Length: 526
Image (cartoon, rainbow, N blue to C red; front, top):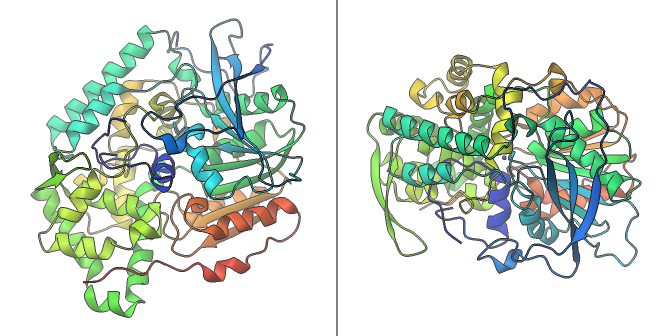
């Protein structure tokens, strides 16, 4: 496994899954592209989807034997048109892995697992979900969505991987850094177009049709959908556009299609920062050690934005890397550690205090900690979704304005870079796919039972976003967990207990007794 060293996280759900299965994340969500994807409301052209079993990928991820899929898994490929408006054109193959339920008397309705990113890989996330107990009573179908790791074609951008490795030693607000990023994005796009990839066919409408086709092609009469992060947007789109055979949906860290995600990125982060400040103030030791946590954080962001700090870091491989910590990277590390869960957020007040005093070792080490190995994220799907579906609904000026309102002490030069994905606006201008049909942003209206799960420390997908989806889902329940971050099922046993309670009888109130045992992390102090 070749480690990547970088600061932005392009698939946080995947990073969480890899970390919790023991994979090191140190140095560690084709054709004529001018033709718009057909409207989701248009009558689809006739085509036949097919599913065929095949051996499971071996290895599942090079250099990570703990992620291999054992004999309890069966695998295969769904074959569908790349563009449903051109059913006689190229096809794509969607990789699928199904794990058997642990129970000797499993439920008849499996769970289909939809990963986040966009661009994350369900097959690589499978071992973490299984370790969390997702398959206790139900078979689980893990999907590598179109364009992602084990599917064909796999639309990665090694050009961007190389840039992110270099960006560890660069300041993000330096114009030269932006030029390098733009050149990498343009080179990736040019290569994929030359290969005949229909970039505008990697979107949520086509993705949702893939999931609907998969259920039919696998001969599954009814299933439950679990989605995490972008996978919740995909799940709600399936429920809206292809509701047949959906018994229930579980939405972990929800991203509703009617929410403008990009516009709300910094306000979401700010809300999680506030949760951290409040939790520290409520703990006697933390409050005594870091009485000015918010002021220290804000001051450090401003100082490092003006004068970045260069910190040598020794990687797991024994190499020494010079990490440039600027104001954006500091803020982004705090976002990522809050989102990744209590084991990672517990050290944040101490790290913030240290860098406020001039010691950037902890933050610099985190800068190279949070990305999965190079080449694991399907950037073609990520950019296809964001660039067609979300960025057209906002502007960089609005992002900065909303960020300044939520974080009035932060400099605009930091707020002009998005958490996790600093240069999405520039990337999308280069990626140049047409805006999605307005139906892509429509709410799901349904009486299918839905369970919303969220973490109060989630700095990536705000628990407040649940309010945008619940009014049109008449049989919905909401459960939030104190101190947990993004993708709550991987951070504590309680969320899986709640899911299993829900799936046993989706029409009944879930058993929430275990929530009393979930508390914010105990922050480390000197």
